[in-house]
Amino acid sequence: MSDRVQQLDIGALITPRLAVAPTSLTAGGSGDAAAVTPIGIQRSAIGMPLSVELAIGYTATLAATKTLSIGTVKVRHSSDGTTFTDFATFTDPGVVATGPSGGATVTGQVTDLKVNLAGAKDYVAFVFTPDLSASSTDTAVVTAFAVFGGADRLPAA
Image (cartoon, rainbow, N blue to C red; front, top):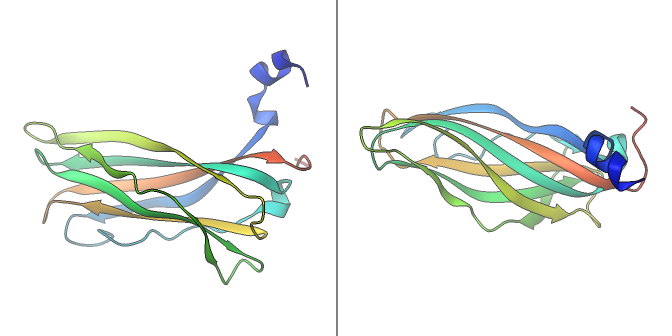
């Protein structure tokens, strides 16, 4: 594949998948400091990719100086799509957003969460724990996409 083709058709080289459905959390309440529910992704259905980058997106309404942190980021794997065990653990991103003076809605993403999937089982899932520092009122929505690449064979579609 020429460099020109790669520049114009990156979609031929990567396969993005929703890894965590949008998840709402409220400071000190529902979803706060709790692991998200991952979506198991079958690698053999997308060409058995050998690498992945996880991108975690968020929108948070934060009071001044209050924060949103992301921790306990892991890749889990499974042979059957049901029973998952840890495959890789990332260094925690930590605080990813801080409320500005007067408070506001802050939107962003955490990237550079890359892992070599050689040796991983057929199914993979991604988990992390979002945590709001405020004791109440702050809210956030988090989600994640996995961008797979380096397939040993191209997917059929």
